[in-house]
Length: 285
Image (cartoon, rainbow, N blue to C red):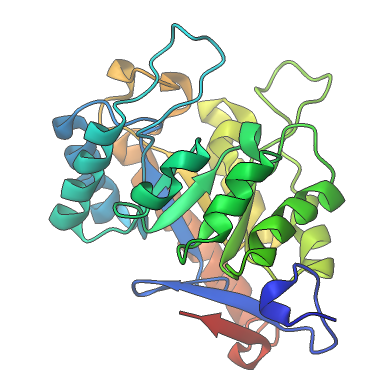
């Protein structure tokens, strides 16, 4: 068996990985990542970052590069967007989570990002997985919209095999015959993944449902399922968002969500102290 840090599957010690980013311990602490779908302007990003920071977010998400279904949709600001995210980090202290979509961009996106996100459409972009695997940055690997647990973990293995042990799994919904929601959020994958892998797993209820009214209950359900965190879309003025405005929480909605989620997580920790025993985790810095 490979070293635990370099293999997605659990070994006999049955310990789970903790990835430290700033003061946040992903896998042990419950992490809330929030921010706009895309970086649209300096004002939009910094105001939103300040709002989510005040409401209890641990990290700021925001896309500088946006792979979109339509080639005519807003594709992001690129390098300008990364510089705006860097400024938002200086203003708020929030670590940055942003997507990298091209293997050629991985090394220099690392100059701005604290966590590299690999989106659902790129889950099996093996060239990209190898490139982010060569970096020392944590990688947030979203589940592909049609992928099985085994396929997802094999993609994580590509990153680990290159020497990067800092992989965070993210369930963001899969495609089914259901059309009421944008995707079908598969919360059963959380405990299923935790049975076989030591890697942290978070949930994206924004993309998982695509419906504003469903984000709070699915966030609470993610906590109850044992997820290590959530990543949600929030915008200081959702009606003006250039991307995913229908699933972006406004500041008050996000504040309420963060409060409820933290309360439920605290209740669960008190209920099952053995599950959250720190001796059962291996921390990566």
